[in-house]
Image (cartoon, rainbow, N blue to C red):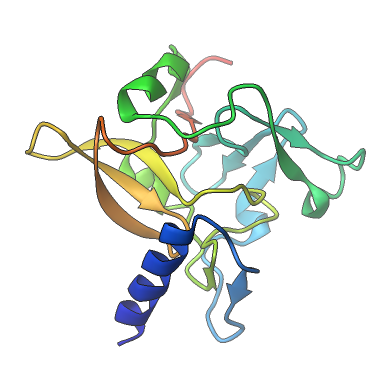
Length: 177
């Protein structure tokens, strides 16, 4: 019942394109506590469990630490010139030898299931507009790809060409800086 309700709420918030204020349950343990991550002042964060290095903000956004590097709680993602949703194929323009699109499993690993709207730790990954993020995970149908709706932290299927989502890049531990 709870999952169906979360799905309905995710659908409603996704179609409106706006976030309400994040809601977190005090009765559920955090799966992405701040101490699981090592936040850097260069706009990246290392997941100490998976060792993956993530961009804190989506492609086209810049981290603004408000002049207080030691306090990530007040950080925000500010839109730059290329801050927008894009079709899946356009996301690969931002991929290079170090940065790549995450798999659906990797992106789901940073969802915070005790929270909703968005289902993310906002100290680690500051809130941004929009709800869906592309992954590199494709399906048997050639035009379908997995994305993650961060409103409720659920995996959804989108069309590669028709849908436009945000992009958050990740880097493997062995990738050179």
